[in-house]
Length: 448
Image (cartoon, rainbow, N blue to C red; front, top):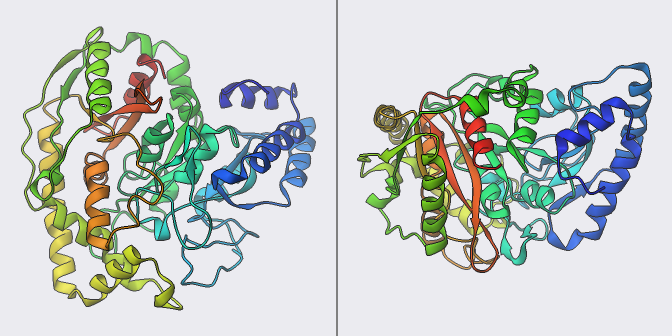
């Protein structure tokens, strides 16, 4: 199969032009051939049976939005009948008895689940390396990381092991691997995907939940198709297939390279990141009003974010703490030692910072930033350091993503250029009014 369009493949499966067995067999073969990339940590032995069942449903006309389409899930999502490791060696890897709500939603739409993909421990990092399985490597250069925490998903899509797939994004975990692997990565606003707020909108300390589910895809149409399936309603794909992307003009797009992490760490953009950023500005100027955004970020953001990001680690029931990786072990110990008052104060402060972010961004329809500060680092670049240096290096590589999560709004990363070494370089578009359709249309205008 030569097509990279998951939408085209989906339509062929729905019409009966292709069988799910044929398509699933193709992708399972790719997974086996590319095992050395470390994208998959578990391959389902039941995928072909699921594909056969999908073909029978097609004959009876019982098809969902993603009928017979192979995909996979991060090893942070429970899939009934499959082990869940959460990327850690410190817990027993139990077989899930029930599907995670997002898995159940997409299974109901006809997805054929081929397996589970690699993640960092507890989804903490912007790289997908752990002590459970081989690291996820970048298909475009296997010496390099595929990003995280949806790194296995991104590698699998970019390498043609699955046509499209869902990720989760708590600090950039969809957008970071999408940028590393040359994909479109959409972080929806909080609540846009109902499965994300099945148990409410706030974390245990009163802060808005940072982690949401979003699509990783080769282009905006595929992302819109998956987002509709994740929501269970047709909206974004009809919008993108219609005239909206062509009619969308005259937006006020404010651009900035300022990062809220600059209050704690030196942030330096490599030439490829700046080149992609400048090219995106020129491309957008053809249709929109592109102007500098005057932004001023809180100097205590880095520390406040780190506190809230790690607050929940204290409640994870670890079997053997000595089997944790250094970053998770260190951050968990700090979380456990932290007083409840400090955790609550950080949650409250982060809400104030987030409100200020949205207020400033709302002077524009869209905020344009670089996606990453550099090309993807080598596998092992972060983990050879102590926990504090590891965290600092991650912030320096991904200086623009987490601020979107704390603000509960929507953002998308879109590949724009290639570096001299051939690695894709992306930009990020933020919608302070949480307009995912507009972001997808802009991605389509940018050629993706």
